[in-house]
Image (cartoon, rainbow, N blue to C red):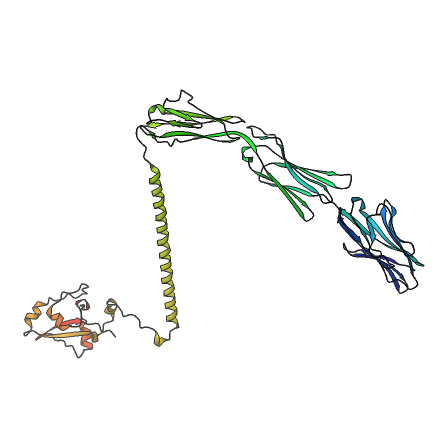
Length: 491
């Protein structure tokens, strides 16, 4: 029993046909598919493997399948030799003909060579064994681009789109892809033509409405074929009538001003060849001199030069005009340009200064915040023995915590120091927040304290009576006068 199996692989792999008889096998190995460009050479591989000892190979034959029939291409017979048939007689050769290798080379490919090829081994007594492959012939296209020969003229009110350029990819197989690369606002149309030899021609035409804006714009044709890319471009030349502007009048023509002129400028393609100056409501002043596109005003300016000046520019496409209204003043107008510039510069400098100050304040503030944060963190981390002492209490806070030990009583001899006592006015029984005036006696009593360190307060005699201090005494009447000062005892 014979079982035939066909294995299909990727391009350039081999297709094998196996013939099994018992435990033995025969196979014909060929390329799955082969491709090549017109005019190049291709190799069609074919080999016969694992022959049975009793099998005898009598002939190797290459055929092409055409319309359901087989056409012989080349034959190798050990007894008869090699035979190449028309139309391949001058283009097909066996690489190394043998009972195991039937590989051939097909040179100078033509489009008609495309098709299915069969490699057949004639064996005895098992019969013919074959394998087949597909040959694809590629055709590299010829590409070119050309602009229209028709002049491109822009006219107001025109809406018809005209042909600008044509891009062609001719006789390609498979067909190319044609696109356009441009900033122009046109449209493209495409056409494919199938030629009799099997190739395809692709034509793309680009159309637009000519305009002043399209002048000197680039239009590029892009052709992609297989892994190749072709580009070509043209620059449009659009003709249009002049666009006229008048320069020279700065709005500050005053009496007796000298050296003034008006210049007529035009944007035109082709350039304007004629300029004409006129006043719609009169004739030009006698003091003017016209040179091509410029009108010069001789002598000092007078009221006679005021008016509407019209300039007409003409080229091959048409004539367009522009105008300017000239006014004459008694005196020069104040020039605001320098002041405006100074104001702008001043504003910029002020803005930069303000931004700099703001940035500086922010940086200083952040550094202070960071410094405080670092200090607080350091204090938190210190042991109790290394922490700084709390700040001293304010004098106002000490007032409510006085004890009898904080009161010092000075005993004065009434008779001996009468004159000195008279020098000291009695203090009222309340806090005197103002500093007392210095005196010799106060300096003597408190040589180490300043006047601002001495405050007066009403004495709580009951506290003295209950808990007398060794430094104080109370007498209802007698020889002593009690005058007390408060010295804060900072403990």
